[in-house]
Image (cartoon, rainbow, N blue to C red; front, side, top):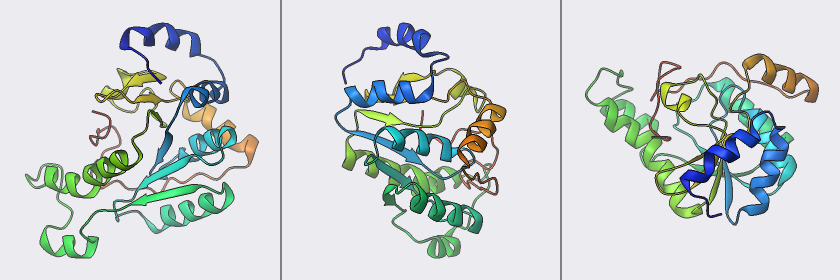
Amino acid sequence: MQLQQEQLPNLNAQFKGIPPEEIISWAVKRAERPVVTTNFRPYEVAILNAVTEVKKDIPVVWCDTGYNTPNTYRHAEELIDRLQLHIDLYVPKQTAAHRDVMMGVPSIEDPRHPAFTEQVKLEPFRRAMEEHRPDVWFTNLRKGQTALRDSLDILSLSKDGVLKVSPFYYWSDTQLDAYLRERNLPNEHQYFDPTKVLGNRECGLHT
């Protein structure tokens, strides 16, 4: 899919208020190598359900930091089985047990935190993107999550030209709760991201 930055404002204006499945169908029809990424955080089930309803065999990239809660791992296994997800799992090259001995989980003020984030999240994510080479990347970014994400929209381009599609961008938690209830889909709130700690802090994947 070849889109230029100047085309995005008109497309985003057209897509605002359009059902997510229509946005996803539009992107899938134009994609050669689409992927959807997930970390199984709260409301991730919405994007996973919506995308796989349109394209059942889409690769689902899961970059697992190794620090998820037991609830998140159980939630992931439930969704993998229920939605028949085609998971491609990417993990850090060093185990969490080894890293715990060497540096532990540094706080965001710790000068080692950038190296920690690189090890557990950024490097596995780059490896995933290099292997899949997607032209379309479905994600569940939403307005109001972080300052950076507030500057994006339903469609945005990554710095390397990948089209990011966030069909639930303007949806509130209340709207997503209704979406999940209507489809009897489970949610997971006991999620922890050691690279962000604070919910409104950007981790680096979308910068």
